[in-house]
Amino acid sequence: MVESKGQLEAWGAAVSRMKEQIGRVIVGQEEVVEQLLWCIFAGGHALLEGIPGLGKTMLVKTIADTVDLSFTRVQFTPDLMPADITGTNVIQFGTQGETTYKFQKGPLFGHVVLADEINRATPKTQSALLEAMQEKTITVGSETYRLPSPFFVLATQNPLEQEGTYPLPEAQLDRFLLKVHVTYPTKDELKQIVLRTTSAHSLQAEKVADGALIQDIQQGLKEILVAEDMLDYAVQMLMNTHPEELTAPEAVKQYVRFGSGPRGVQAMIAAAKVRAFLAGRFHVSKQDLHAVALPALRHRLFLNFEGQAMGISPDSIITSIISSMERSR
Picture 1 (cartoon, rainbow, N blue to C red):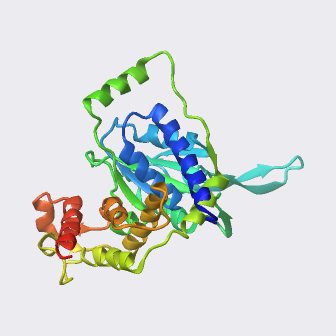
Picture 2 (picture 1 turned 180 degrees about the vertical axis):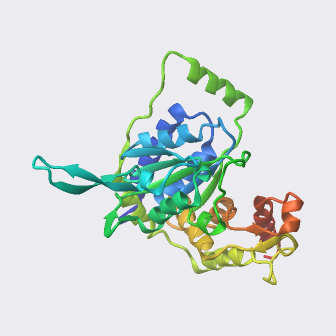
Picture 3 (picture 1 turned 90 degrees about the vertical axis):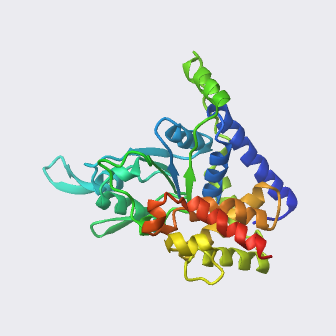
């Protein structure tokens, strides 16, 4: 519960300490870190996309290091089976020769789960992961097991290499609250990366928060106010992703096949509440909605053949939607 402005400030100070510890290990990527924190405090899952070598795995591991929660990593490969990540029943033999079955938990039974190169696994294994993300439970045989709370899946994928991969279907991409683009570092950041990774001293992030704090913040953020006009603005932004919408910009009508579903506006509001909290506010502003629109909607827009052939990016479509809405006001 948000009892006072002081409570909000105390939580903000805790998040600042997390950022400080992350910055000890990770060079740059402030926007990526910010968006991952939106996802964690909104109680959702994130998909990180970027070329190899940008530190996606290290970033997730470092965020997990700042919180006193269990961390597990799964390296997805084409031969990975659902039981390899969910767990399975194993036979145990007693002293008298009797046999019993005991459930052996898989790596999904962690608070922070890194699903590395998720698009390399087969659809069957991907669906097992995504079911756990949605339901927060795992069913093996006739038994259902609840996953620990809080539970976050931070998945990575390489957008360049498609050989031997199984791209996530659109309906499964929708399960991720945000899709975060990991960009290439600048020249100065590259120098810092080299210095940090080739020196004799390795830096490690310290634990500055725990699961109880994260859950308290998650509950408290539900009380961040969303005014009626801000909700209307977010809903209209979502409606404008559909080519049949009268107020949709020309780019949407020309290049988009299907727009975002209801989860898109849910993700926008949830992430916008976290952004408002990090700014020390009790209410969501239009700037919050603009800032969260790209990561919340870019994986929920499906381009038509012309859009794909022209190399149109979902980000440019979303930007055009925001621009057209601002011009019409």
